[in-house]
Length: 280
Image (spheres, rainbow, N blue to C red):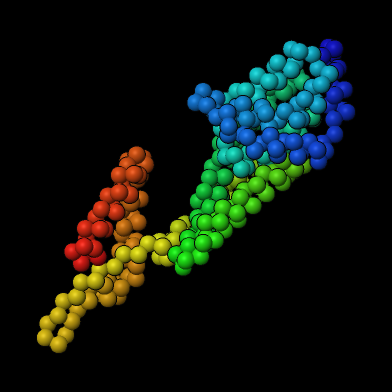
């Protein structure tokens, strides 16, 4: 065994994960997205988040080993920022337990897990937790409660930052157990599927509670009258709201979101014109 490997082994044996290191990783992770770039995206943030562990683990290592470690964490990296601490905790555990001559495998693990974690994070936070918080806040705001926006911001960030705070600990202590069990892909798929289903339920509730579209047209014949909106409600309540939402989804999907601003202003203009003529 070389001197470098001896030094690295000694540092690994002496390393102890402490609350101070967890706290430093959490604080560093608050700036995780600040150095995002088109070449390597979150790579610099990845290295900075891991630095509290690396600077202690490699304090006695040679310059060559430190350079190799820095380059390993500056390779392309992109995942969901909130769930990234789970992966960083796992990488910290692997840094401590893996021999230096086998640490190139850490790059493969990091690359292999960043995709599933990104998908899970998007489904769990942007399609589930955020819509739930936003719908509650919007409901409060519609009734004139000024704390609607504050509620959305505060509650979402309590969950968001709480997951980050405990993510490092869970990733460090439980990550290896999940990987060694061979059930990591199954667990991620189950959580992602459940989050997607919940997100669809929340989206459906938002359509029925926040999208309001009615037709006030009424046709009279003698003493009888026909209200168009009553006929539509007999077919399916909130049918017009569902159709409008489906149209927006279709346009956004067809244009890959490039016509979002045009779609918003288009709906506003059409709504104003139709309301002026008494159609809506």
